[in-house]
Length: 465
Ligand code: ARG
Ligand code: ZN
Image (cartoon, rainbow, N blue to C red):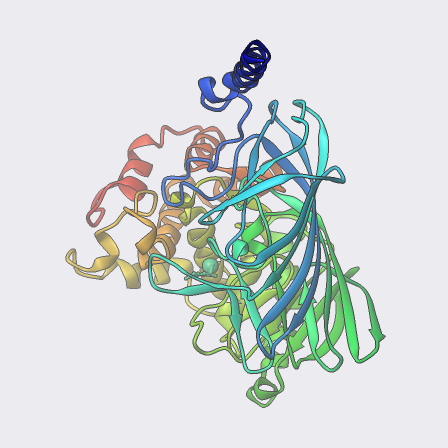
């Protein structure tokens, strides 16, 4: 008898050793088969995950504002970019009732916003797979290092849904990094009488038993921070600019404040930037004016800019310009935020210049008159210092000044040719400041190191350039 026991013990030990040996390559190499939990963004190191590339999100969301309850299914189609024994998604809160990879139940654990998934069988590099997550609970607001809130921001009658830079995991499992763009389908079910507005085109709207399902589809690649499903009581109007449908949704509280008239200006702004920069990037457009005064900012969510109140005319121009710069041509790391905000702010200046307002040079001069001690000069646009100041004036104003100074330095013809090329070469893509510097040098035939060093990287008020 003892010998039998001994033999069993030995067999058990061998089995354990074999399991260890199988597990060792992943553990020992520290990541050749384990997708990394982040993509190393200096401002948001855990945002996004390594090892795969999302192709498509299909989000089926049933939301009831009373109790702030979301019942949802996300189906994510992705391609493994390495052999994957384990990988992560980003998701905050919620209870997950089921998680399947290619239809088979998968093990998962939670660690902060990291949802760690171990598929039954490892995924080969190059292989396309699906992850289905059934989850429910209260969607969350995410508070940024600068104190602003985003994510699922509840309003009286629904939610204002904006994610820049890290709100997406508050309402759907995402590879939350701007470099992983994907297409999106949304099916949002809300009580009948509530309107839910996703990105892209309205596919259908169906009533069933006191509820309405709104289906939207965005067919251009989109960074996770640009997804939206803002919902509440809205008046929805559809118009067109050329072949592009424009969806304008306004909270009834904002209608008397002229919100539809403000949004109505989008058609002309789209036409203007299409001529200046190249064709409008997407197959639909529009905007949403909600009543969410506690948010305090607007966001250029893809094809549907989000306004927390009736915007000023300049804000509409700014958000439309982002459809080119920010949404189609997207930053790769958040510290390059000036590539979004500086370009959108400059676009406001050039729009004014061509519409009888101050010239871009006058806008530049007004800012340049600020004393050397002014906060505008303390942080250079491409080296702001941290996420707590990523939306501060240098990203916007000094970013726009950099472009105007470049315009003067290389001349209008080359400068606007450069902006057109920047868009044409990087449409639906991701870029860095270094990419822009390289293209500017190529387009102008000038050595621009010192110029960009001064404007983008050196603290203090530029004096010569
Ligand atoms: N990109 C927005 C704009 O058009 C600003 C977003 C600010 N986001 C935030 N969490 N504070 O300028
Ligand atoms: Zn902006």
